[in-house]
Length: 327
Image (spheres, rainbow, N blue to C red):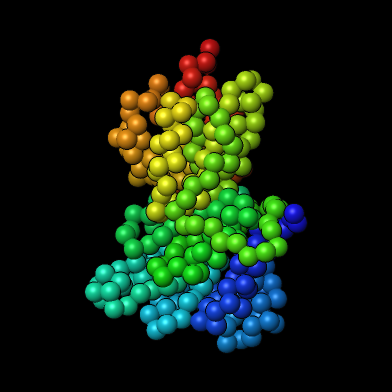
């Protein structure tokens, strides 16, 4: 099977859906003439023209609102933000218009729109450009939140998001756009709301999502060298969340470590911990452990970045502690 970059998987998903459905279009900062800030729309202007690939001003609230209005009138916009950090400015349209439109209109207006772009930290970009927003958007009923970790999942889930009749928040990463992975040539669509077991195991469950899945999988490889078989689950979709897959895994392994890139308070790991203790408490042989970014604004200095984020060693230690194997 061919290997392509994450950015190309995103481009293929958008292009295939635009060929399939003329109501789909792409708008955002630098998506047209510049071929995308991260080259995820390379060549799309040439194929689809300026009426369907639209450059916007640097006004996230404004063009997000245009996208919401277009979706209410029968179109299927893909709205690209240069980063979800900038999309704080568009939160009013995402949260107060897109997420609530179906309910507020008594079912008269749906809002089939995809808001997508990179999320979380990407190195030395400092505090205001390094935030993870999964838990924030997952808080609001009416939104679906997707965070793929590899090119295959990105393409299949983005195609599903574009076809979905609800507003979807699709979170990528600057650090993943160059990642390569196997992606089939033919048509495929992945279901929204279904987690994926990336590695099967029997000793401890590790749950993660997004680019920090790389850390989870690397930790599982290190644990394997010591005879510990960790089961690694990639959530893929944050809302709706596939808690059933997590519960079944915990019933098998009897231990749970949750790894995420965001802050600890009101986090995705908090929600998972609550659900597991409610649904599978009697199966737990050790307290649930979670690893998050440190509870501080993200720093610029590389030494502080390394301290703020959980790494492979931290995950290995947490799994061993869950198994009472730390000396």
